[in-house]
Length: 262
Length: 131
Image (cartoon, rainbow over all chains, first blue to last red; front, top):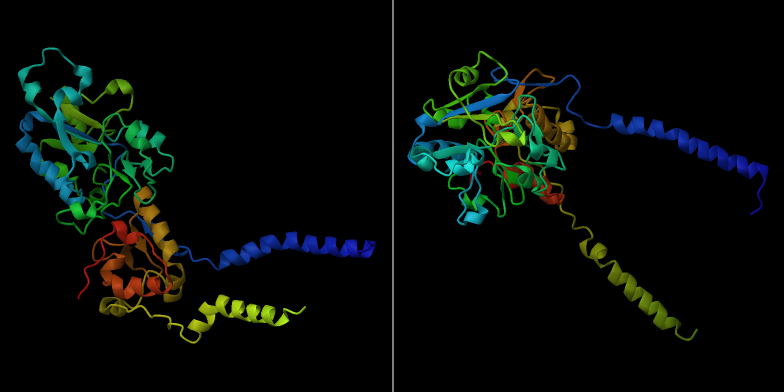
């Protein structure tokens, strides 16, 4: 083909038109989208409870025996559809109990007192002020919410289990198997999980949203207090003012929001 | 040049075989299904958005809603008609499933036809079918 000024100008003109049409096409494309609606609004429910940093105080003087803890664990696990796996290695747990010496390894003593020796300690996600799991999560499926809850977006979890490696409290469980066949009675008020996602305690975010206290708090007969740690007038802060309390592995700097009165 | 008839025959056979799915299914297209609205949804007469927008964009809405609920804690949606909805797929009377009471008749009708397999129900509890 012979190049002439005429054909060069034609091609240059067409190219300029092509580049120039991009924003116009974009405008057309976006006008066809259906978002959530311009005049429509989304907001929190009127009864929703809010805080700067939700926290929990567990009074172990009122929870001396494993039997005292069972209804608390059952209340949580039943409403959140936590499965009961047959094999220990597949176990899923949101709230459970451990031995004192394992919960508080910093307080290790060669000669532990008798009470601490046999005391079952209720453990759950600590909803840390500086959570290591959130830093480890590559998809931001785990994140710290405005009210301090370390929450999981199960939709986004890819099951890499970095968070499980990062959590120093073992608060997270992985669904190695499809959990549905292992849920005795599915509660329709909360979704189940699927194979390949991590799960943990959510401080009952779905109950706080409708103005209810967490299920474990309700089931504890006053042994567990729940409230805003940033508010000096809150129940939890009053309890912490009046009693000596400890936290799990404070030396790691994660700032657990679950306090224990021994 | 002497193999002309073989070449032509071969080409014809090849074309017929390669187009097998087309001529075999010709005129047998399944009619597009209509999702069946539950009595409750019919009575309400209006979803969170107009029907056409729901048809085209319900997946975007569900995606936006799930992030809103989980990540920002905003769980109530007020539509342009002023009605409030619980932004939930599967929990409670005021959720999607509260009105669209049958997954088989409503969701699956079109999803099966279009061969779309969303994973919503791997975790979310499907409504109990009245069957």
